[in-house]
Length: 276
Ligand SMILES: [Zn+2]
Image (cartoon, rainbow, N blue to C red; front, side):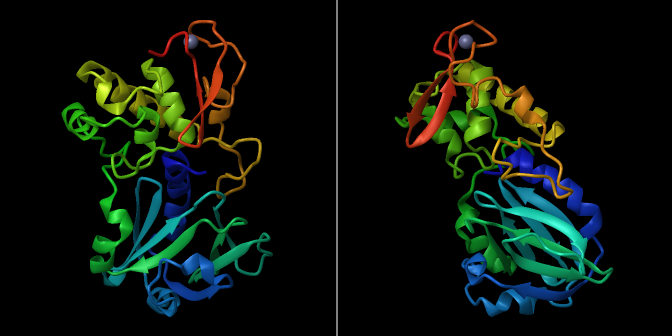
């Protein structure tokens, strides 16, 4: 599932192609992709003729800012992929949303599993969307140690699960949560409320470094190739993963075997030898 570094990588690549372009055509062949749009016909009606002003991102959501104060939101779900190609070129299978631009290019949202969605929102709708309750962006706007300490206080859920909770911090998914907890030397099973202030400081430092390195590598393309850059390249962070997907391999820090546990239904890779 694309996480913050993958979505940020995509944003950086499509930004120069999208900004200042006007939208000329909109085609949606799978209504499910518009399930967050209260009136599905609003999607095309609102995009048609709009000019793209800027791009942004909050957590795992890509935000495309339009004139008229509209925000075009794209969430890639489990397997969503974006590409921009000449309109006459053949689109990949499972391309459900196509948005034509005034320079002849086409924005394409391809999603085999259709867990992704896209929606165009007014400022009021954006403020009331379920995602309006998301916490601060894990990389661009991370919480202070004080703030995170308050948010974790009294929480008995494992810190791994709390890192995945988008209402606490937005943008972290399974891969970067495991890598962050490893880098911080924290046992993923620990109740969130048991972390000391010093451990929370370490966690935030590790989170920043892991996300920064993930972005620098263009994100993580796993063996399933579900995530690819808009130009078809793979993200290279897989070679830098210390624990994720490395069950039974040797921990690079303590030499113990890396284990895979399941925490709240999510695979969790960690080293019992050096994560406390
Ligand atoms: Zn270790």
